[in-house]
Image (cartoon, rainbow, N blue to C red; front, side, top):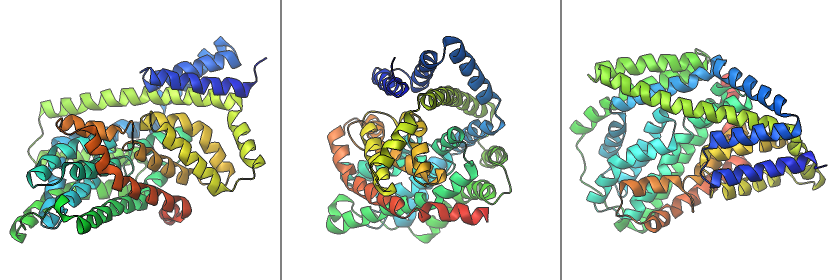
Length: 435
């Protein structure tokens, strides 16, 4: 008779093989979860559980927040938000050494607050900023490294799609997760800005200064992003202080983005249809992933593998910080060949119960998990953000981009260490809002 824990380990191994073979993450999670439940319980019980989970996900009112925020993002895309955020930042700081790289980080932070996606952020801002930086004489590796790192801000700065998915799977408040992400997101952006300034202080030829833009051109550029910034502030701020539920906040965001698009003169049938089509395509994919993840989580909990791992941590008498560092190393190792969503959905059912037993808040753990996941977007050998940039600038080698991102990886590890050492950076704002 095979021990339940052994079946759990075999299930994880099979899932990793499926993912390495190119099976979509949602399908892989669903197949392994159903197969594992069939072995642990019975085929009939596995099918019933799969049906129950599917119905609960599709009928869950709270899950409506996901497609609504996606629709808000796609409407803002149509309103020209991507170029506007970079343009205003470039006009204000472009005349400094590394100014366009600083503007790229600002553009990624602003656009990330709309898109909620790392890959969407890096693809959109890079298509605007990279040609401008190369035209200004920036070193290709430095420019592409700054963009690859800046793109990761899209996964953390609210409204983050990754945090929404985590909140649903971990059954945590999305509003509190968004509040918890504010300080880590801003401090992450600040760490990248500081990295750029230090690099350009020692090697100014990497990011030469451009011509100073007069104030008469800066203020009109600033006015182009005030409406989008006000919309984001109203939606996220209203959610965090309790004016709206997450679904209501997303609905307000959609209405506000439609008003914004109308004022900007971009509202037409084709634009709305394209936004709806893109939203449905992405939301449908994420729904499959969530269903698969919940079925897989049920299988993992049935095997008792999380209890066994928790017991092992207790037997080793490891401190909570040491246990979290070990989790970090495992997540970074898995992030070498898994994309961020796959990493999060695979590890949450296993690591979250252990973290809670060690006394960590599930809200803090969600920020920690997404932050670690973000590093996987830029570290070799997978580094999806790297491949996105290489697809935009095909003359740049992967080696050039990976070398350019190394200083930003250093900033990432320091920032992640601060979040682990000082959990209050993550938890003080949710506590303040809740109070």
